[in-house]
Image (cartoon, rainbow, N blue to C red; front, side, top):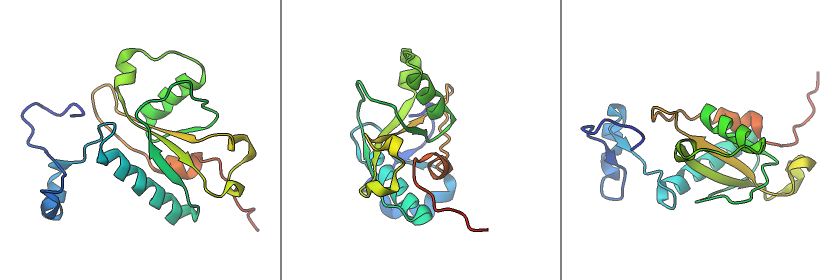
Length: 159
């Protein structure tokens, strides 16, 4: 699980242990399951969508993807440095080796229900969000990339 030592006592957050989370939160011994097709990626997508709406006052829909074939990376946002590097490689048309592909933890398609919020060059498809762990298995998410990397129309600044 993301490169944790074999003997690490980490519990996966589930319906059976949610009541324990708050008393254990500072021990960092619970994790969400980010396996493709499971609830953790869906939940993370909902959190990211709510965060964007709260900070930018823009509603978005974020859907986890289990795979992406023949995608048009017109616009993408790396949710961490590794996700950005992978997105850059894909945008340049490079093939990913198996080791790099295996580090991808999350892939999302983000859409805007109100197309007026989106820059013209990004209106023809979803915005892809990529989350990947480092080669050593560490995952460092940078959600602030969403605030600066989304192709949204920003109101003019009045000075």
